[in-house]
Image (cartoon, rainbow, N blue to C red; front, side, top):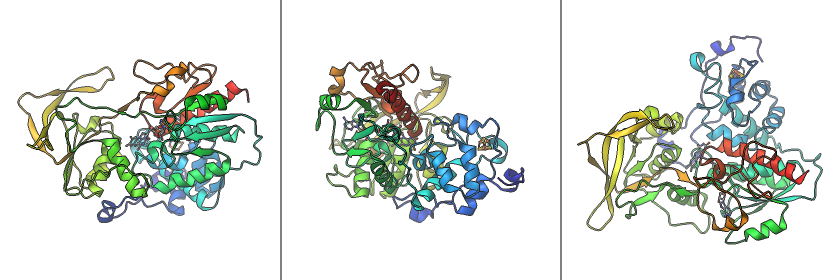
Length: 470
Ligand code: FAD
Ligand code: SF4
């Protein structure tokens, strides 16, 4: 670190430059230019190396942030990447898609008065640079056991579980119904936030480490759960949450109304030029209304812009302050031409004489008393109903756990919301009510974040190793 303890005043926080708006809004590539070596060094040097680092405490995987900032400042990239992998299985992903403003950077000591250290972008730089230098995890010291674990789901939870297992000599075999790894990192989060090659590179790294992938393989359809229970010492469920939430609006099944995820997935198949693509959902030339205010809604509006929609409107029932989506992504969407309409609650989908969508009836809202979660409840303002005209409506109301008939015979208890019960505390972490079966990520906590899924996958691997006594 520099000897100048006031570096955080002399050097301002900078964010990476964004690509020109004209190209950015028609391309499915990441919008940020990478930091240069000099910028990384200067930005990392702003860190105060706090004795009690709030950034580290707030990070769900408790990354050793001040330590790897110091290594990055000194250009010791290989040591930095080794250290960051001690707590995180996918730092290059977290650096790109974590809501740092709500996590590490939000709690950085410098945040309020001087601008937080740009932790996320340094994290991304360290891993990208190390990969560029040919770095891969050193597996030479691993002592292999005779144990093998079936991991269902190649999302962040499943991958993190496989990462910790393989580093400890337990063979993970990862099953996923999709043709590529990543779960929602690939078939959800669009490539303008996370380019698809990032996960493809990770797949090569994991494969070289000894993780085996069986893709295009759906458990319960292409392979029986019983086969996994019989052939493996334990099973990890990292199956996510895939039941799309609806608002119960009139005509919500009309042609022209789409759920967010099939829209994003069809776009991914096209961007990646994958075989067996579902029907492409094309917003070109359409007036698009997206209902919802979370990260999924932001991904839908920005994908619609890139598909050259005639206009894109995001309608949300609370005010901007109370939007669940990342501030950074709302700003990006606005710059790209998305029109935001706040305090509007949808009442019904309007259709034309042929039954096709022609708009959404909405009512203006004002914020009332807080609900059980402490968020102020939107209350409709009588007489303010009107129609937002639209050729396509995308519902982005979130996800809840999906039914899994194939799991029913295995005594895996669910809670009242359908989430798999796998406690984060106790003697054996993330073990379900069937001792041989473990679970983590969205399927256990409800749809959340990449980094919390990684955290649970890693801890579940610890639980599995305790159970297997390895
Ligand atoms: P998933 O990522 O959903 O992975 C589950 C995997 O299991 C999938 O690949 C699925 O195919 C597979 N699977 C399920 N059932 C079976 C079966 N029977 N057989 C075989 N395979 C099966 N979080 C952030 O932190 N930042 C963001 O910017 C962000 N943006 C998001 C944008 C969108 C559009 C969405 C939907 C979510 C976003 N999230 C974001 C949330 C984040 O992606 C999830 O919390 C995270 O991916 C959950 O990880 P997981 O491993 O539990 O599940
Ligand atoms: Fe550095 Fe901010 Fe973390 Fe303190 S809170 S150690 S200044 S990154």
